[in-house]
Structures are given as structure tokens and as C-alpha cells.
Amino acid sequence: MDSKKENGSDEIRVIEEIVEGYWICPNCNAKNRGAEQKCEACGAIRGEDVQFHCDDNAPVITDEAELAKAKAGPDWICPFCSNTSPASAENCTGCGSARNSGKQRAVKEIPPGGAKPKTGPDKPKTPPPPMPAAFKIGCGIILLLILVASFLSCRETPEKIEIIDNQWTRIIERQEYKTVEESVWEDEVPQSAVKLSSSREIRDYKQIPDGFEEVEETYTEKVKVGEDKVEDGKIDLGNGRFQVKYKMVPKYKEEQRTRMVKKEKFRKEPIYAEKVTFNINRWIDTKPVELKGTQDEPKWPDAGVKKNTPPQIGDVSEKARKETYMVKVKRLSDGKEYEVKKMRDKELTFDQFMKLRKGTQWEAIFSGLGELREIKLDPAGK
Ligand SMILES: [Zn+2]
Ligand SMILES: [Zn+2]
Image (cartoon, rainbow, N blue to C red):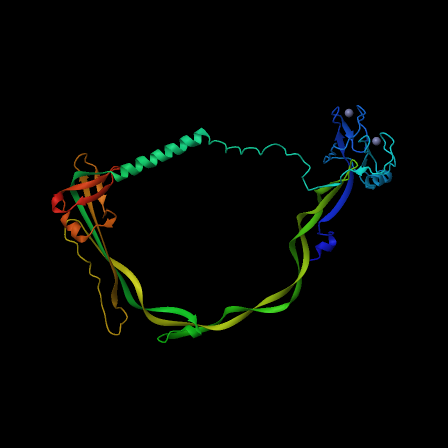
């Protein structure tokens, strides 16, 4: 992109201006124009010790004759009366003495910001605003609730219970050897398949280059919108004027633009292949068998397993066995009933279920929130 050419130089320009400073009369404190040789208020001479000052808004000198005076050199100091006279004056503007050996006022370089008086000590950092009271109270309440809940849930108390019912379920998941119809691409057909039919179908697409087209594209461009004028030091010219140096720092903004670009086009071309439909024998999930009971001893249902080697159509096999046990419990202190499937997050086992017979009494552990955690099955708890 040649935005640089379009939008002017990206470089930092340096410009210079001549401005008029001022001085404060040591006799009467009046503020006088820099070029003034005598105090306008009291007539006191601008002595050697008087310093020149320059503000940011000092008037810029543009008049050719005034500029020539500013550039003529520093004022000179009369050895007889200490008055300062412009470089152009051959005789002292105070006492009329000839210039002779009158020494010149100093020409001083002032670094950027160097002439500015400090604007007081750094402000102390303000502390962050205090949290609103309502927010603090809300946080406190939430914290308290969490504490109470965790205290109650951690506290455990033993209580007498009686088993009032038993329930068990046993399920066997099964598979049956069956003939099923499937279809796949010709290179994926299993060996044992019995082919039924095939057809030509689109399997995929190829992207074929198909020339170019012009498309609109959005892009972001940095656009120069002006310059920041930053002071970069000045020179006290020794005659009430200052030469101020500025850096002109380019300013930018981002702009959204559009342009036309050439883009390659593609067209889709189908790739055909043979799709084969066939019969094949597979183990397929079939209806599970289930048994349920209460006080009787849990048994597994008849899975109807039938196995031949090699397998034949109609054979049945077991896939997985699942058992769940539940006891209904009454707390003797208040008659509250519980359904217990787990103790301490572990499923009830067959052995535990067989001990927890209807009508037996045990000691159970309850949490502070009233959950039944565990039934004590060890002899000590009986
Ligand atoms: Zn004065
Ligand atoms: Zn003099």
C-alpha cells in the first residue's frame, strides 16, 4: 500500500518559531515585554541579572523587521550603567556611552519542559471508592449461609432405624445374531456380505479452478489526519525573544475502505462411486430380560442364551448384567421414611442387601441436613 504517498510524510517534522518573552521588573514587579529596555511602569533599567521568561502562549513574531531584531544577537551590557542595549545600538540606550567592551547577555538553551516551573508535588493517589454497604452485607449473608450449610452437612448423628421394605432388580442386556441389510461404498464391503444390489452415487466433490472474478474487499487504512505540535526545547536569545523548536508528530485514524480484488473461482464437480447394498449376519442388541423382587433372594433372569460355533441365525448372547438394590427405611425417632440405594456414595451391594432384611433394626448415620449417610452393618453398630 502506498498510503504514505497519498497522505503526506509519516516523518516527524521539526519547525521553529521566534516568540517574544517577558521580564519582571525587580523594582516594582511589573511584567514587561521582552524587547523592552526599561520598565514601562517605573522606568527602572533591565539590568544584567533580570531573567527572561517565555510562556506557552507567548506571541509569535512574524513581522520581518521584528524578526531581524530578534535574530540580530543578544543585548549588550553597559559597563558604566549596567543598562542592556540591543545588539544594533552602538551607544548605550541608558547613558549614551559607546559600546566598546560591553559584554553580551548569555544565549541559553532550555531543554524541553526545562523552563517550566514544577506544578507542585505529585498528588497522592486517591484510595479506591469504598464498597457499597449493601454489597458488603450481601456478601456477608452468603458467606454465613455457606458456613451454616457446610457445618450442618459435616455434622453426623447416629439414630435407630427399621427396614420396612426391600426391592431388587436384575437385568441382563442381550444380543441376537441376525441378518441385517446395510449399504457402503464398494471398497468398504465386508467379505462375508451377500450382495443384493448396487447403484452409482455421488461420493464427494472436486474443486475445479474456473477463472477469476472481481470481488469487493474491506480493509483498514491508517489515514493521517493532522499533526500534534510538541515543544522540543527553546533558546533564550538574550534579547527578550526566544526561538522555540517544535516537533510536528503525525496523528492518524483508522478508516474502513473497500476495494476490488481478483479472486480465483472454483466449480464443484461430483465424484461418482458404486454404493453396494448387501445382507450380512451380525450380533445386534435385542430386548433385555429383567427380574424384580422384594423379600426373596435376588436371582438372575433366564437370558435364553443359545450359542453355536460358528454362530447361527437366532443365537442369543449376554452383553451385560446390571443389578440394583434398594431398602426402605423408617427413622424410629420421628417415623420419617427413606429410600436407600447408596451408602457413602456407593451402590448397595448384594451382601448388604441380604443383611438389611425387612423388620430388622440398625443404627444409621444422618447428616445435619437430614440425609441418611450410612447404615452401620458391623457388629458393633447392632
Ligand atoms: Zn519597574
Ligand atoms: Zn550605560
